[in-house]
Amino acid sequence: IPQTVVFALIGSGISVDPLLRIGLGVALFLLSGLLGLYLFRQFRHGWYRESQPKI
Image 1: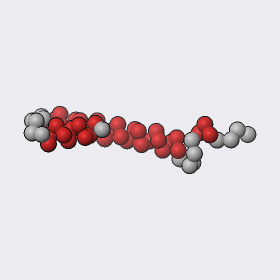
Image 2: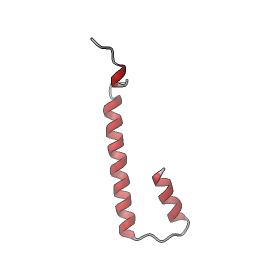
Image 3: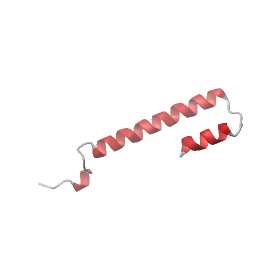
């Protein structure tokens, strides 16, 4: 959703400083990478950690 807001603002003709655009792109990239890493660690074995059988 944040990327959609950025694209909508830029597409509507609002002028954004190039440095801000690059910084925002890097920040969103890092955020998506961290979210992907978190989800990968949670679901890497095909199931959620809490649903594993306890032995």
